[in-house]
Length: 355
Length: 259
Ligand SMILES: Cc1ncc(C[n+]2csc(CCOP(=O)(O)OP(=O)(O)O)c2C)c(N)n1
Ligand code: SF4
Image 1 (cartoon, each protein chain N blue to C red):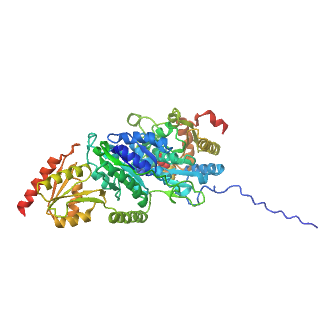
Image 2 (spheres, rainbow over the protein chains, first blue to last red):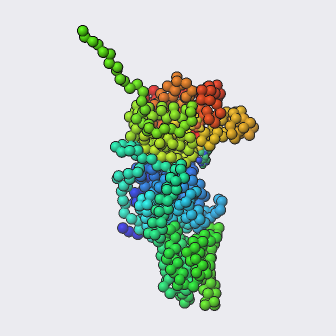
């Protein structure tokens, strides 16, 4: 395969097609609309299902219906649209169905703006709708990673019969980078045994998230929690840079993670022992590894494009072992590496002073 | 002498449709949801499509249809059955996809989803049970509640000045080009029930033939929340609902005649 110059949104769409996407339902919203537009042509070419829904509420419920048939299904949106999808996401989770949702996060709250943001961290990592569960949340930091995580998202969704959210900020959706797409894989031929296809030569299948008795509902929840524990054990993903001798550990994901990496390089050039942990799964959060690192470093600095949301997970993981500092920009502003470097230097010197 | 002994001839004249399970339904005495189930089940059996059918349950008193029908089934979020059915049908164009919805589900919270499914001409069939109240939650006012009708959330009678007018969904949807078959029937007496059965059968054939969106509205009773005895509830339906919601064929595309 060859590397080509690809825009994030298009790369995700084509990666989904190549992962065997059989049905897509969506509603236009910046900054992910190219994804929908691209699939409107591509899916038709391949004789697969594409439908522009009347709203995100309808789109996610169409996804819910299509997911019942056992095919690979996806929708994509951005923050206000993801807010509208919360109902459907909760039903999909309650019915143990696999599906992939792309969230190209933008500035909020409210209508906000169309600039890149990481303001959806709470709404997508906590439960995405009512009830006790967590979607698996993958956070790419480049177009290549967006492609790789799209493939991974479908595999994880199928493996666990679970909802997977690919969460990027609008910058990753909009930027062009050289990247390599995977080869085309054909959609699965035989549907899973739980799929709704008509009760031919087998007892009927029922897909529901309704359990009338407290006992049955609790048993259902216990099963979900068991699955979540397994995911939490096996699926945390992250990247580390210069953590071996780091005194200050920066933690940042997505576009903020890229900026933090540039800042780290500059800090290292200045002789500061700075490391970076870039979570690739926001849920499950790589808390175990972070806790280990917290034993070795003197201080953490969380960098986000929000008011401090992952910050809470970092605090939980580090359990008050070390000071946790925060640097964030809001409103759709991507911090510059210079300002992150400045934040690093300020806290680093402060830590050195106290050491 | 030859003795002739009369042998009783055993013949089944009435039995549970294959399409229904032996689950006891949870419906109140006199509730016509049970009749609607029976009619739909008979129609599915007659067309021999039980193993090709996926049923989408609503949120409402009929949420448990998946327990009563021996077909593949799922439960939608409140009002979203037409969107869910769209997802199913688009992936499985050769299966029969049916939604079963109450009036709160279809006309209120799910008004958007049914309107767009109908406008797109989704090849699905909707059985729409209109009992003029929210049954499951205890008889609150629905968009179909008649003017002046007392409910638990309009205890002084539905007032036009604050809540406007009841929505006639069959009439509304029939104006959309994507619809192929939109009719209203009633379940208040045997003759009407027979006509309802025929309409459900036709609606399913419309889906088989891929003619467009089909819906059968069934005027139904909710004796419990109307606060009327079952027999009186049938009379109440006839006297009060029929004049506002006339039974009839609101949209029947010409191709239906050939089915
Ligand atoms: C989002 C949401 N809002 C409200 C409810 C509560 N609820 C359950 S059933 C129902 C009304 C059902 O009435 P209808 O559709 O007329 O069906 P019926 O029970 O009369 O057959 C309501 C409001 C819900 N389950 N979900
Ligand atoms: S509450 Fe009304 S609609 Fe519900 S089962 Fe009882 S009679 Fe039927």
